[in-house]
Amino acid sequence: MKQSQIFQQYVWLISTIRRYKRVTFEELNQKWIEDQVTDGNPLQRSTFNRHRDAILNIVGLVIECDQANGYKYYIANPEVLEDDSIERWLFSTLTVSTILSDSVAVKDRIILENVPAGEYYLPVLIQAMKLNRRIVMHYQRFNGEPYEKTVEPYSLRLCKQRWYLLAFTGHHVATYALDRMLSVEMTNETFEMPEDFSPEAYFAEYFGVLTDETPMAHVVVRAYGRTSNYLRTLPLHSSQREISSCEAYTDFSFEIRPTADFIGELLSYDVGLEVLQPADLREKIRTLLAQSMKRYS
Image (cartoon, rainbow, N blue to C red; front, top):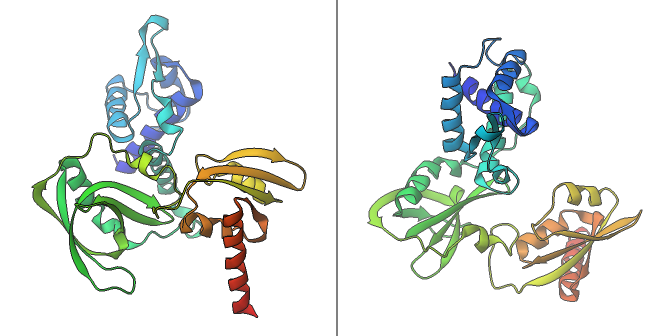
């Protein structure tokens, strides 16, 4: 059986159990046959158990059996698919992958976003993270000279089609773009990952990957027209809150450090977005727009 077909069965099981909340094996088997997951063949219990183990290992979902209430299966930790976790990303990736594998006939009509070649270094970086090994990388910033650096790999992050490594340099934590790495090698030197360090918490006050000493701010923006719906359906930040709305516009607030990454995102909405607070951020946006206008004058 092709790997894509196995992944498709994983996705089917997860989606079906999520949809029905609690379901017996007999009910699962009936739906399995009706949906012709394996050309109408029944779901074997041994296959189901293997898939449960694989789903736990790959996606992190725990499929439990409630023996006290009719031996019904359910997802014990559904919250992992409801936040910005790696589990949700993996499930989304598996879902898309299985759908696309069955879409060869229309492959020329499906357009995906390109991710720079930095993904080439993902295997060695993930292995180094698993073993807590330092890495030696040759790195070249834009318009800079190549240099060699030994760092401790803490975390990986995908942001705006680029992979980034969050690493400890020996003095501070820094972020490196994988597409600017010229080579990466894992060393035999080990390090201890700080127990109190959380990559998620490290980035929590920022938008994107640029982290600096920009002070925290209570930011209020006004979204006009359809921009309101864009922000509602895909929030810019976990702190985003809708504070008021009328027919013409909606106001949203953020508790965030407004770095260049965040400012760039706000500017990308053009006339659909206006910064109301704080005053210094509003003035910075106005200055950037004025400088941009000069290029067109």
